[in-house]
Length: 415
Image (tube, rainbow, N blue to C red; front, side, top):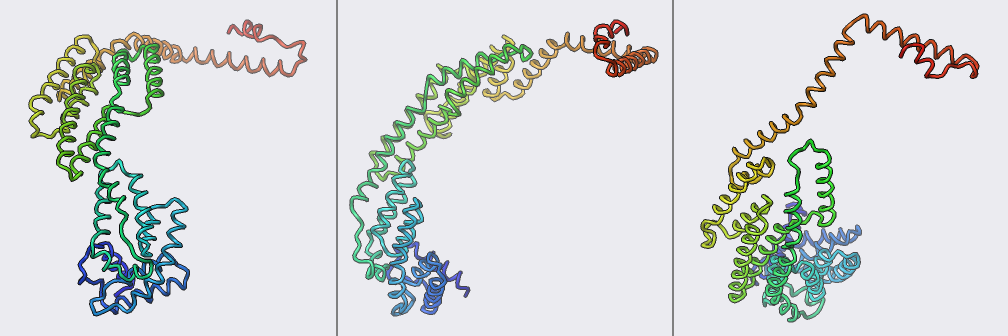
């Protein structure tokens, strides 16, 4: 079997730290090949690959004993400490954890693992990873499965304060998600966004109005960046719910679910009632309700009510000839055909406003066509241009005092 394949199989088996005592990572012959490969890598100076190979050479070998694991553990320990410390110094904590762990320095690896967990503590999945990690470390099978490494690096017991910190993560995560949601749902930004949408000019030919609105857009973007209050709020609410579901605490789960549902309803209602004059914010209200799921009892009739509200606002905007606004509302209402119809009305209105300019341009074009379509006129213009060219050449060869002024030349040529 290819040595790389063997190494990969052995490393994969090492991920199951909680395996039973009777499990094995391959036969003695396999362990021998991996160990010899590790020695060759070490001689070649490939310390990191050698470390992982020495780690793979440890473990049960489907026989009474693995004759290579003791020496493999002795060689892995100094490599793991050296390489892990170098990676940690560079700030590559994930790699440092892997290297310390491969060298059997489990307490040091746990310290680095907790630094990684704290950096990702806003993510519910970081909690699940940490919980599983320390549960595996605390299992009796961990010590028996890693006996060779522990005989070199010394006794190991997971630090109980780490598990206490991990178990406190869900409650902390819930509170942090609530704080993020409150900060995200910025009503001042929403008010300014509604004002911006309401000030959008309908007449795209009004250059001054378009310029003012463009400036207003730029000022809004400079002040608020690319933040979207409703979208950021919904992300925080999803995080809140995930913390409750993953917290392994019935009371916390129930509390988080209740607060999540209340905030979903509260934010959707606020958008429907206070900020409905911007079509996007009505769509955002719909997105809040979609968080509840189709079978949620609080959802009944609410999306339909928003669509009805959007339809009424679209009809009102259409009556006021605010076709862009009307089209956006119709789309929220799910009436795409009507949205396209008012877009057509908008195009027709724009064409009517442009008609005088188009007529004037057409008249100009016709006049030029008539003028330059007469061969006699074209020839006369050509002769005038040629006479002007000769006069300028003659003037350039004459003393400066005798040159004609441009005005004189124009009068002479009748230009």
